[in-house]
Image (cartoon, rainbow over all chains, first blue to last red; front, side):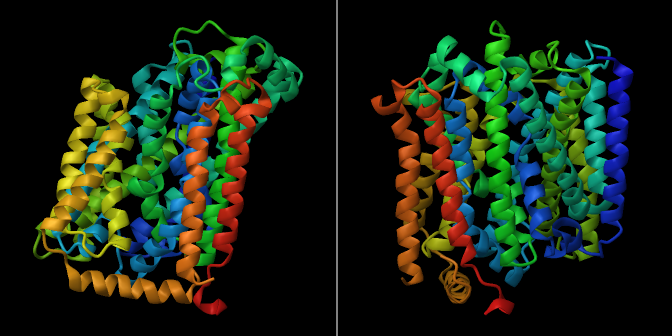
Length: 492
Length: 67
């Protein structure tokens, strides 16, 4: 595809998004709550769209389609079990929201620190999130760089793609904090879903005469792709190893759990949850059908992740549609990256800076948070430029690494005996296990790093809690407040 | 049903459903059925049922001005 056409499309996308970001940004007041949480006043629809755009990255139409290409229907099971992880939000969402309002929490890690009465818990959890989410974000930029380079036949250099995506992400975030991010996310979510649905319908009818034709061809030509383990990729160990950490994504990943603080009411949170579920279900199906289409139309690819670029290059796909899909994938990546940058910046200013500086004011805190927006972006770009093996390993390990916070989060709402020492040991040791196992390729008993890091975190959290002193007074007050409120609000 | 009982009921129901989503497609019931109405349909139905259940649970939530 012509490079100037791609540049023009990206420029228009940037201009429209910037208008939305500036309009949203003009409405924010002062203070950290306004900048990082949009004043806890988002509507359910915007919350649902930003939750969707933040959760679903370039992985869907590239990585998940690739999984389907090599492994078949197991990819659907993996992604829909992940989607069912929203069950956790039915239990924990209102709890996060209630204590967030009462204690004015800015970040999920601040909540952990207060609940376990330890500044070290907040700081260590925040740093762990930075360690795992920076490489994960870098991989998003690497994806955009590679996609633009591939689709333009090399005319758009890899670094130009990375730079453009980073600039868009940081500009929109800087313009108006979460309000700008949420509104541009909403725009991007609409683009992602519309383009994906239209393109898969188009390919199904142009390529196979409809979805019935697609499945009829799969059943005759690639029957193994319709069962598990099927062609072999999705052995039960791989399936569990991939799926288990992602099931806990809605709790373990701070850029989405922080979203539980922002709807303006429980009714709006309900719209957020249900809206996300519908979005996620459709987007998952589209990505899987995309992968099946690639399997049937271009069966001899050496690298599964190239299924999407290869599909876009086919003659049955008009150039205009390919351009829109490219924009949709870029939007998915940018909307994930800018949300992560914003969340990590809020964690640094609240959980690290505020805890170590004695005379910090809210203005100073906000300034530090804002400074970290471009700073984190620069680090992510640097990582994307290096393309080190460790970055890929840390990115893959992100779900396993962040999983180690889940026992502490569940414990904070359901277990009075949990202690700060237990949180620290489970997060630090669990995080190390995830990183080392991922980097070295260790798979004891055939199980993936996420299974082991999760297990280590659970055992340490429970075990260490029994030998150390719990913050009983805080636990009683925190859980007592929730018990009363949950009863009044009919939350299970 | 008290909230505590509802919590246990839904918790157990979801646990069984998720366990089924992990296990059933790998059993001979579905792994010998390379059809669109095999694992593909099973996982789609699983997701639809989960969404339906979450619709029921969240519909009961009440805000201050609704009581």
